[in-house]
Image (cartoon, rainbow, N blue to C red):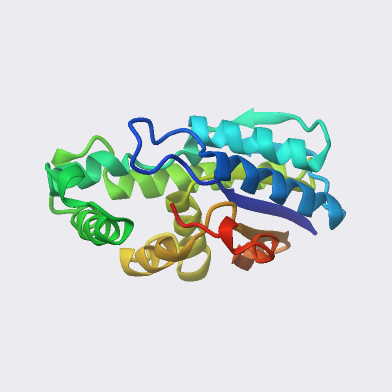
Length: 222
């Protein structure tokens, strides 16, 4: 059976002017994951990634750790939604209010709840429904590639990965409650394994991160 491994990017620069860049720790997380895959004999024949800088840098670190030169394709369907704009529409002064990761998480969940409700779609450049359709398209394209490339890694973000898991478990029109719960716990460089069989794609594991457990310093959520 063919496998699609969804990988969340390494730790980005939370709180910095440019969030869309890996921290030093994020680069290390990516290299650790690549080495872990190599040690387990997992050799993808194709790597997909979103178009964001943190996706590109995660792929670079992963391939360095893997010690292999693997073709890389960009599919912006795997990009994260504009979470900063979603939070800003809920709380324009959020940067001053969210002084800690916990405070930001509370604002984030309230803001995404508003976004997911569908009541304010006209305020967003991309509604939750549009986001769901975009990610579904990226998943369908990746599934087709599994016919040729039996082992594929796709580097994305927490939102698309949690949405994919929600879709596979509860169907394409599942409400946002499950998505919110799964998005809350996804870790940097966590791996979600999808298997392609006769009945299509199914999820084998979600957010696996044993490659980080030997060093608690590596376990991060933002």
